[in-house]
Length: 157
Image 1: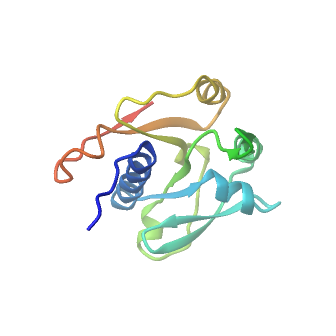
Image 2 (image 1 turned 90 degrees about the vertical axis):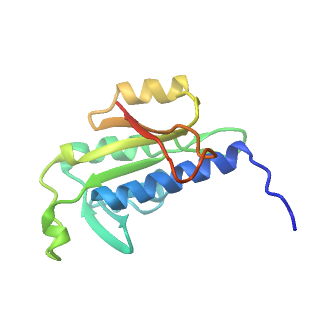
């Protein structure tokens, strides 16, 4: 038997897992910025995840330039780094009923940074968030290593 070391990376991964499950429970589709960078079509289409579905969503023209700009990685210690973790999209009841997804405007989208414990946004993240038309939220998990039966989550922003 071996014991798993509780590292900052493990805490971060668990925070993202909690975020994904909350999205599923609350009707939000999500996509990581790295996936946006690698797959955004010239027509502004992206494939978001929602539960076990892949949802093809057209990004509104009013925000497509911002999506392209924010999703460009920066070089951090010879590795690509993305400024935020996710872009989310609130799905309407039409999707739940099995009809076509129809995104009516930019207000259904949100940039999300997942933080665990008392970790803070970097100055770069704060600067980029101030330049965005798309709303920005921090998804904070109090402490992912506390009792898994009592997970406290807070949306900031």
